[in-house]
Image (cartoon, rainbow, N blue to C red; front, side, top):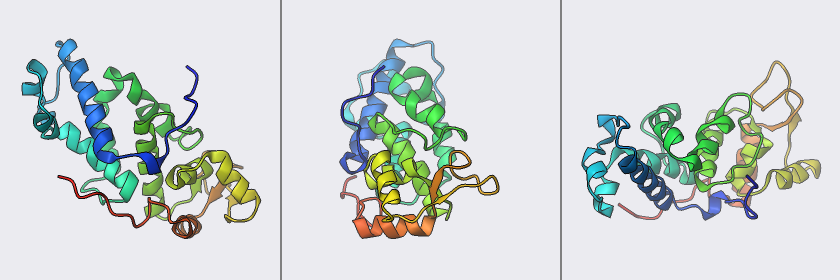
Length: 211
């Protein structure tokens, strides 16, 4: 499948909208695939058999999990559990929604994480959440990871590194947080400095006041 002409960027993402979109698509699939065993933890049982209202949709744990991850990715709103725990709770999306496979499949594995730009809004959310987790933990970021937080393309960030605007170094076998040995990586402090200087929404912005 050819990539979209314009890739989504973090600056354009509304966490509430992403959570609602994915939860709605998941529920639509669940109604068709009635044989799928849904975990009671999601609280989806009354929604599978009946048409769900917006209020009911927003009351599900699936919607809240999607929104929490999106708020963390976009605004840095602290999660109440490790990010990996939220990712595992969203794994049922992988089998039912092709739109989620880019985000929940290869791009978040250890070998391919950060190597290509996400092509969906949900992909941007997961990539940004992973990148933010590394930034918060003081780990180096791959160029694509820094790019997603800055709402830029990977090549744009690489050009800024080449121009000396971003201080980067080559990863080594002893320091493999980057996607592969020999790739350019940016230390967390330098990434935070540059993102703050850019006024990136991923640092210090406040989410809209929504319930």
